[in-house]
Length: 132
Image (cartoon, rainbow, N blue to C red; front, side, top):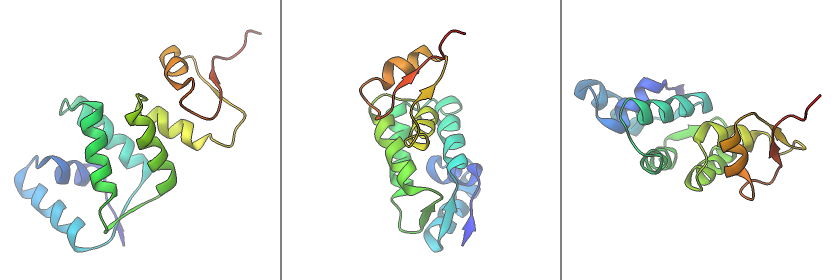
């Protein structure tokens, strides 16, 4: 099995750069590939920022990719949980952070939007650091 980089995934999903997209798709169809969690974070940001896709469309694309029989994930349970929370309004990177912190007593952030959106959606408390 070979691991694939962000640019391979992006080419396969978008068809950007026709020749490279064909090679990327052929690879993914032909043999097992490993997609690292960090690659998925980068793919999310590239599709949102460079291609202007909505959170919903990126979630759909990532679910399609991760559901392919040749695609193996570094941490499938973590990614599945993060994709669920993405559909529920969280940013994908934040959702991955929270899913990875599931066994912790809480998650601390200065991101007020994350605190607000996470409330009632994730199983751990999310809040700002307490004052000294």
